[in-house]
Amino acid sequence: MARINGINKAVPRGIDKLTGSIYGAHPNQQVQDLMLMNDLNHHQQAEHFGNVADVAVVSGTAAAVTTPGGFRLFGQGLAESADSGMVVTAGLDGQRMSTTNEDAHTIAIGSNVFLQPDTHGPFTFSALFQFVNQITTTAAFIGFCGTASDALDPRVTGATTVLTLVDDDVAGLFFDSQLTDGDRWMVPHNKSNAAATIATTAAGVDTGKNVVLATYTLATVTVDKSGNLAWSLSDSTGNKSGGIAGALDADEEHAAVFYVESAGTAAIRDVDVYAVSLDYYHSLS
Image 1 (cartoon, rainbow, N blue to C red):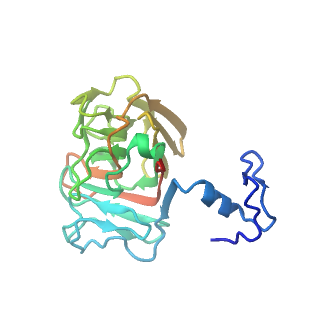
Image 2: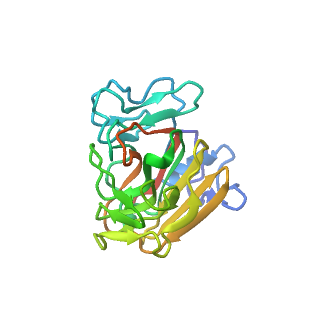
Image 3: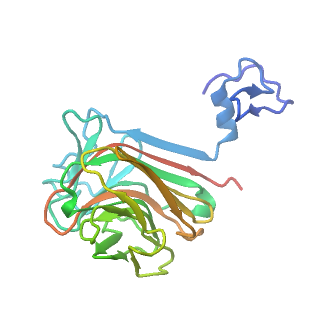
């Protein structure tokens, strides 16, 4: 922590958020000191995967691995010592996350189940990634779900124009090549098992933005204290954003999850992950 010498404790201190200037503090006071004192309940976790060592070698047998930055790597095939992992790849300023060679199996990165909107909101999960295989036999999800076991099953599945909501509590961005519009980002959402399925034509579900192969995508999903969801997608074709009111229950706990899945085929599916971040609050009351 930086120095806090000579502060007059009788004078209110803070940061002018418009100008960034410090008020009520000794000249030696550092901005980061005040940010720490004012935001003890604000947690920011971010990791860039330009690591020199593999996060999880494909020969490993662990069901879940903690990344150097404290994120959780897991999924159905991670424990199989043949093909699934997250490894350094030549020429990539990130790491390649690969599923196992089985249909409907996932490789996932995220958190444990603990994020409750009315306690930790607003919370935001982001990932910067690109798909490197053909996406005609691929599904992916980024967002929040109520269950996240080491052997993670897909939390949403797609067929023609129907999204099946496997998890009682789930909301985020999703695509599945088995949908009629198989390269379109959708926004599935379910709270406390309110619905078993949702149509791709339901209000707010179709983002109007397609998955772009072999180009970086920044996907961000935010849930506020009331359970309202906001999403954004940015890639080489442009930016788009939207939201779903009341997507999740405010008093239910969720995990942050980004996963890729082999959909409709027994084949390895890869996604190059550059960075992920998780931002949330914790009630001090």
